[in-house]
Image (cartoon, rainbow, N blue to C red; front, side, top):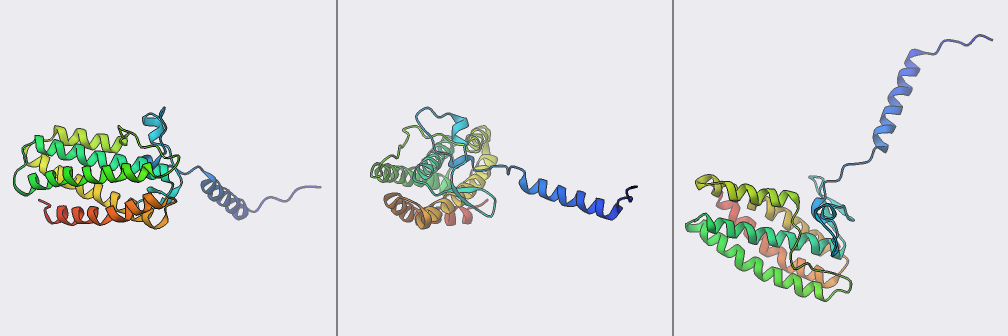
Length: 205
């Protein structure tokens, strides 16, 4: 028996449906570099590993497990301290000098508070030398290389971005985390970070 020719419109529709299904089943890219749980043997690759979390509007996963939160929060604290020290080395004056000094004071305090909270949770390891994300390391290098007014403007932009991300992380974990001592730390620290964010937004050059 001879076969009837296929309907071109049906062939096209089937091909289109197959393409949609293939796109839906394709592995999604992971931008959650800052939330990977770290172990003593972890390196920069391990620090970029995805961990359970929720997605922000920007598509970044926020940590909801204790170890992932500690890893991300400690890296955030270290970034603030390092960038403030670079700002001081640039000879910032006036309100920018005062802001950098406040960053060192407040983030030293919150780093110590994070260490205390982490010590109260079984199985949580807090690194003495936090692993920064590639993005954080790159931003520090850019700030170190900048000079004059460009350095101050770059520091301002970096601080707005860093504090927005830190505040989102802290408020998310405070509401949805899995460890009460760490959730309490996040809830207590979030208003401090919000205050920093409000200040640096007003200081934008």
